[in-house]
Length: 143
Image: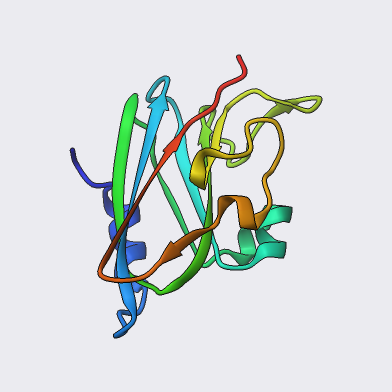
């Protein structure tokens, strides 16, 4: 499986490597097609995560979507608690399109919580420590 490509590589190289940092590998599975982009937002703040404030992420990665499964690694992610939100932006407009409250595109959260509403930071929290950490997110589609 290929890594995310240039966007993931550039972001990963921008993260400071410290003595207390880990390589964080995220597997995203269940992508129904290769249309548009995959947006991954990694939060270290509960309020920003709950409000889905992308300007307050610890890291953000945008990459071309791929049908099925996609994996990438962020190197040197400082140890701590994080929650991850993923959007399959099929039409490439940089947002999760909705009709009323129903999402029209795919999304998912760490720990595979939040099928019907944005989960709390505590529900989606991943603890990053040690040398390597892996997580898998299953994408949810309503239509």
